[in-house]
Image (cartoon, rainbow, N blue to C red; front, top):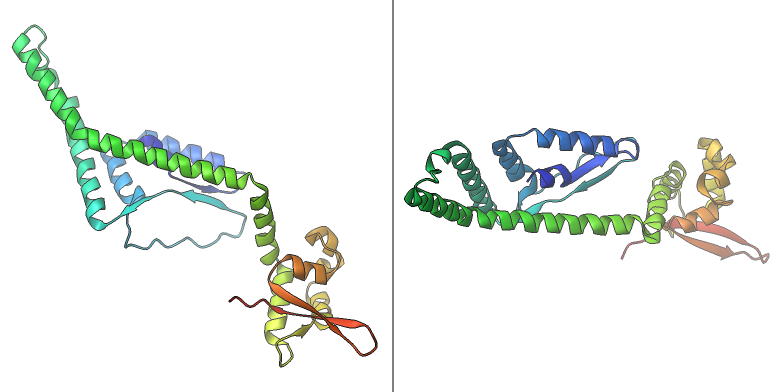
Length: 246
């Protein structure tokens, strides 16, 4: 239970992620079983019909992981009832078992052992549920780790950064407001506006974005269609527009 609650969610920056995790785990380890059960029932269990709203994106690069167990309202209520039973049985064992333990009496000893066996049968389903939940959470964490360690993640991470960059946002805004009747925008005109509004980005295009031309940037961010329109004198002019999603 403590392992699940300490690890089913995590968030933070690269610098403070581990510190935040350690603080969460320390807090969980200090909780009584009743509090742990309440927290599990509210934070991990989730009715499949209830939507969870994501928090607003912070102003700094942030990563988060959350694992939940969802199901029907009936399933969730059944698990919560089993959790309550587990808590009651544990309290009964801790606070009231000692008088039952009379090893000098074979009869009382037999009754105590039967009591323990019966209690074990009551809590076994919840133990199985928690073990299966841990296994599922660990499998999800491994998948996430493997993905973050992959080249595809590195590509997607760079792509997301590029698409959210100030320069790409400006180019998106330009073509949404200034374009020909066929929807295309002259890259030269957009470049002038970018140079006026984001001169440092244009001046340091290669260093900040990894590309030495706006055209290459447009193609790399996978947000725009780019078209070289032939001209009568044998040259061409570059146009772009927001990529249409079918």
